[in-house]
Image (cartoon, rainbow, N blue to C red; front, side, top):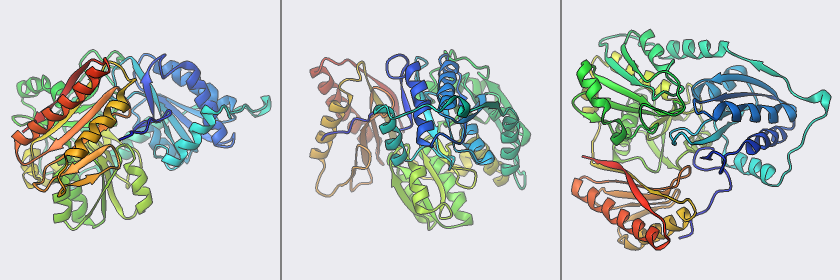
Length: 474
């Protein structure tokens, strides 16, 4: 199978190693290109995460915007969710946030937003790529260059509007929550919002530091395992963990450990469907818990590509879509079309406080299956798509006639026994992802081991070294 190689845009924006894929020159030209795409007029927002290269790249893309005739509002260091929020609040033409999300500190990138407050649609990405790669960008004359302003007030507005939108109607239970902000952009926000709701919060790693000294920014189960001791020792009920820019949220429960993201999505879907029936849009790597909850509640489940669930939500009509989500990320169309880890943390807390029961009690109504989210890291990006293509071919060739194959993002094989496996190349890192689930733990382990072995063999044949990240959850 031939796996398409993207030009610039991956699963979520443009991302890669600084001075390799992401360069100062690219930042300036991207600003010029987006200004050209917008017709050399309009107002946009820029913001950035904590990475050491982010302020530099933000200044250069801002210069490109201004040189192309756009007025720029600079929100500075803030969570990525503030970008979409500001576009919606001030009715802007779009924006760019400088981030590499959960990638290591040497990476960086750009997430580009449109006037709808979502990240760019696929067709918009293609049009912008054409301008950028073909050098079709252009400058405006001296008397038409853009202006630069600051919107510091918007940060307070974001917090106020979020608290007002999700303040519990009634409080039956007050949880104690540890918030691990991984020295990222959400450190000043999630603890503040939760405290405004009356929650007792222990905030960790809230000071910004682009080297991420506390842990890797990806909030995976294996990375977060050491945090269990802190939560247990402090006697807190739960732990919320963000990534570097705050669009992701992972949840741990004292005595239970890491909660599979699919189950959190399923819980959200359950509560949304209590009030209204409609579509629940999820990415192709979501498990059976979401499917079973949505079907039992009379909702309609729609599966779509990773990183583009908002695109499907727009296609279906926002009045018909109750949520769009992928593991770690959550979009509530009532709030906006951007992934917002702070909103997700607040909404989950609201449910807990109103229901009057701790999260582990609420999750009893959500199915729980053994599951794996594994990444095979390649020491070279050169052969990633070739290796992924061969691995996908192997997976497809082994699928029995009774299996269902889904090819919207890599290859997912659904088996008759309610097991499934998905193999796809990462759109942002030199990794090949393996996701799988089964009613039986041993089958999950067997499926993972087989695919890891296949990928390792393919990599070795091409002189690529590998190591495996992630874990299998029972």
